[in-house]
Image 1 (tube, rainbow, N blue to C red):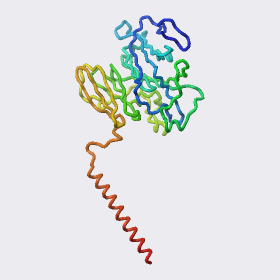
Image 2 (image 1 turned 45 degrees about the horizontal axis):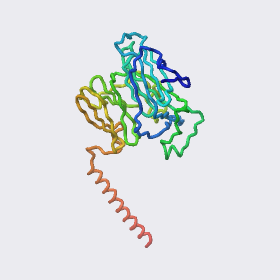
Image 3 (image 1 turned 90 degrees about the horizontal axis):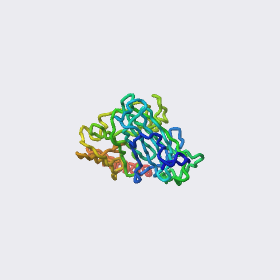
Image 4 (image 1 turned 90 degrees about the vertical axis):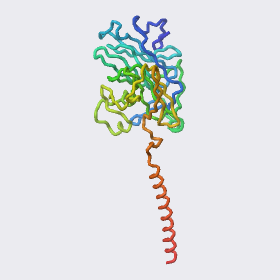
Length: 324
């Protein structure tokens, strides 16, 4: 049973088209660590992430090859509260077809569909924020309890602010996953299973719906890590998690955190098996394998020796001054 806002509906006609097919669903991982429940923008304003554990993403539409090769095809996405069945948000994409690939992490939803007119695949990114007016911000909670949130009730829902942006993508995604780390501090990458039996790691910054539509960014925007908007997502051969290998018949991608905050483990399985580790923000908490330990030891010994010599000379000069 679905309901639109506060209006109950007695059947599934909320999807509006009898011929529509359920093309994708997605829910958030309840065990995913969330480093902070707020986002600080470049202008120092605060946005509260909409973190609803009962959120369900549903995409309906017509699949490719189902007599809908014209612009009358449409993909509609629904954000549904699983407790009450209330539709929190609905958005339609004209001239679009499934199958739809989607992934939900924290307050971000990323989904892909096929644009009929251009014949290309589109990545659509959505960020959800709590739009409750007059919500108070506690500096102490932000510093010492960043995961604190106001109680969430499906029967008394907060208004939702939705930011969305679309991009063309050069990869054809068949499935999607997200990297995860122990504390959730490290920036995330979206792992896309492609039709070439590979896994592509896409930086989450490139699908940020707040990417400014200008080439010259302000200092504050650069500090926030925003990237100028481009209608097509970049494709780098160096960003394939599977490198130059193919993993035939990929069925799933499993991601697990490690004790190192910078690193996660990725296991891809299907007909073939592939295992690797990823560091989305580089190995900021570990040393390289070829690190020069001898040079580090020599530098430390030099500092200790220099400190002892300087201390001895200081005492000697002090003694001379006293005898004058």
